[in-house]
Structure formats: C-alpha cells, structure tokens
Image (cartoon, rainbow, N blue to C red; front, side, top):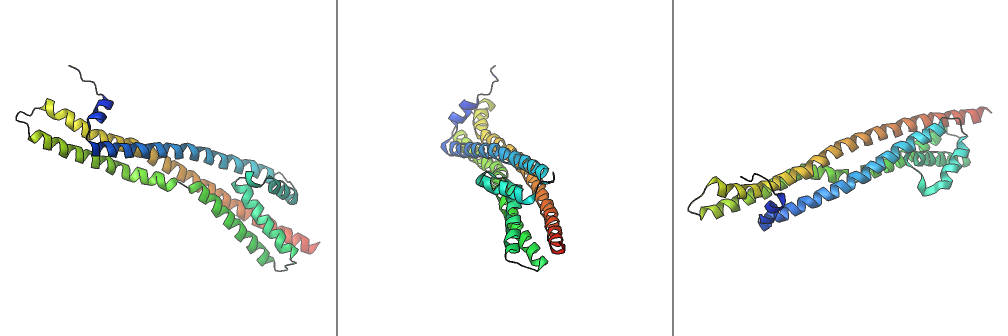
Length: 228
C-alpha cells in the first residue's frame, strides 16, 4: 500500500479558493524571509557599529576630531555615530551663539540626540510589524482555506452513494494542507519578530546609555571652558 504523501498532488487537486489561500500564504512566507534576511544584516551592522564607535569614543580621542571624521563620512554613518554627530553639532551651534545658560545648551544637545536616536530605532523597527501580522493571521488564513476545502469535500461526497475512508481521506488532506502552510508562514515570522524586537530593545537601551554619558561629558566640557 502506498502511504506516501505527495504535497504537489494535494495542492494541484485542491479547489481554487484553497489554492488562492495557499498562494497568499506562500507570498506571506516569501516576504517574511526577505525581511528576516535583511533585518538580520541590519541588526548585525547596528551592533557592530555601536561596538566600533564606542571603542573609538572611549579611547580618549578628541571630540572635535571625531566629529569631523563622522561628518565627512556622511550617509555611511551608523546609528550611534548619527546620535553623536547630532548631539555634538547642536552643542557646537549653541556654543557659537555664545549661549551662557549651560542647561539650555545641554537640553538642546540631548533633544537633538533623542531625535536622532528615535530615527535610528524607527529604522530598525521598520517591517517588524509585518512579521507580527504574518505570525498572527497566517494560521487563521490557513484555517479558512481548510474549512472551505472541507466544506467543498463534504458537499461533493454527499452526492456519492458509497463513501469510505479511502474516498474521504484525499479530500480532507487537500484541505488540511492550507493549515500546514499557514503554520509554515507563521512560525518563522513569530520567531523572527520576537528575536528582532528583543535586539531592538537592547540597541535602544545602548543608545540611551550613550546619550546620558555623552551629555555628562558635554556638561563637564562646558564647566571646564568656563573655569579656563
């Protein structure tokens, strides 16, 4: 007795509504994997950039020189570099205006860094919502295809006189393949969303710590300039 399961035969023999559901789920799965691959590279680059920049920042390099290096690279800068550039640029701008209110200078720099940090985190979070939606709705989309397929199968079987398990089983298998494809699309999306969301939270915390430490450095710089 042949007990093999031919997926392609089951898909080919399914009704058109079920085929459309499976095609939709296949599209969800393909788009999810594209996002997963891109997001993996993006997260890896953000982490490596933060580590590299922090190493240079805390090596005792001159802030003005570091700012010039970062500014000259322009669009090739990473997340933490953009935060540093925005904060130091605002700091220099306020100092050039001869602003004597130290709190205003620091608050302006912190505000510029928060805006830059929010922009960087937003870029890391982009498309994560799609993964969450795929993970949430794909099983239900697959279940819809299964229910539709089973209804069609029983409607066709109702017209037969002699119904056996050998007749029923292929039709039920055709319908259940939609649920299997729904899980196939949902499981990687849910796993990737949870993993990347956790990584984004860690990167965001790292950016926030850097902003606080850099603000303290700028504050000490102002105090040093005033006492000089």
